[in-house]
Image (tube, rainbow, N blue to C red; front, side, top):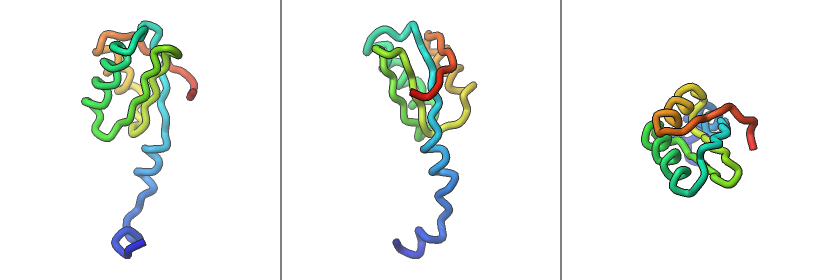
Length: 87
């Protein structure tokens, strides 16, 4: 590892990348719904990674720890998020 990387603290970035927020979205019923939700979240939260699974009706988000913000984004996209345990 080069010296410039040794001096950089990656702990906060690693924490955000490792945190997973999961939501049950029962009205996400198809790939189009999943794409809408994924696009809304990734477009609103730079760096967020979203897995939207319409079969399991679970949306998982990494790259943020703000559960309320993600729920608001899903709601604004026209869906009903409920808190879910990590899948």
